[in-house]
Image (cartoon, rainbow, N blue to C red; front, side):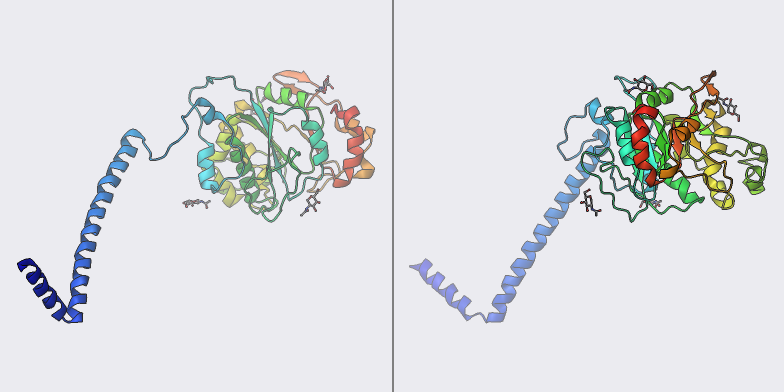
Length: 378
Ligand SMILES: *[C@@H]1O[C@H](CO)[C@@H](O)[C@H](O)[C@H]1NC(C)=O
Ligand SMILES: *[C@@H]1O[C@H](CO)[C@@H](O)[C@H](O)[C@H]1NC(C)=O
Ligand SMILES: *[C@@H]1O[C@H](CO)[C@@H](O)[C@H](O)[C@H]1NC(C)=O
Ligand SMILES: *[C@@H]1O[C@H](CO)[C@@H](O)[C@H](O)[C@H]1NC(C)=O
């Protein structure tokens, strides 16, 4: 009875409160509750967050479930050549190298074919023949001008092998940048041990078996490098390059090279010679003919063969070599290109000196396909 009365009393009192006070009351309760929740959750975040950081730093522990790291997961090539690293990040990552030289697994080395192109690869069908049946022994990377959209079928060896590319200008440092970018992308696959730079106008002169063996059994990398005392050699040297590069050290060589992994790392990591060449070798100094040959001759002369594997016909004179089109292709021309010259291979004089040739126009494709099996062995 009393309780009911009191209730009733309070009820009356409550009812007698004005609306504005009631709202204020609710608001205050809300505010206190909200503030409390806020403080508790902030502390929880701080506490658990710190613990998380602590765990990450001390135990390398992360809040995610990952597959157990097997050796396989470290050596498996990336399944996609696309990534979102910029050059700085890519070059840094690409130059990781094991200090223990003996691999704890059977490493089948691959030859990486790096195509530096404007866009399409008109001679692709010839290369498809060349690569056929040799899966696992090669990998392909293509640098084309940024606007170009490649359109290869899924069954093509060139399908989805385009790397993140940038603008390239003939004879300028952006050309060497593209070459380093190609190298660095290929280096992400630990099986790649040899790196061959090619253009869309190159063809292979021998079958894959011979090319693979020739490159992987060589004690030296095939970087062309010679001392040209004329205006197109020493004449392009700028004294400002001292002390990094002296006139006596200045070299010239064909752009199209083959290097092994050790030299590829040196090329990608270089920041000693790069600024000098970028600043003091501008057209008519064609930096792609001097930078890598000079740098490697100074740093690792004992590792380069000083000759290129790519045949180029300079006999017509001028700054550009001869280009062979449909009407030039004949057995005689191929024989002349493959002709019996002599060179040193692992200190022995041999007749096989060149594995690739350029430049071939798109119109040369059909006649080359007709001759490839007989002349090139693929
Ligand atoms: C790549 O990105 C990093 C981090 O944003 C930046 O410091 C670096 O300068 C970038 N490099 C290039 C070549 O853009
Ligand atoms: C891509 O190739 C296919 C078949 O080869 C062709 O039908 C298609 O038109 C091509 N697309 C472009 C954008 O070139
Ligand atoms: C590659 O060419 C060589 C010499 O021409 C030949 O002996 C060999 O059988 C060829 N290999 C293949 C896989 O066709
Ligand atoms: C290449 O040239 C350098 C000097 O320019 C020399 O030391 C080296 O022995 C040469 N390499 C070969 C394989 O002859």
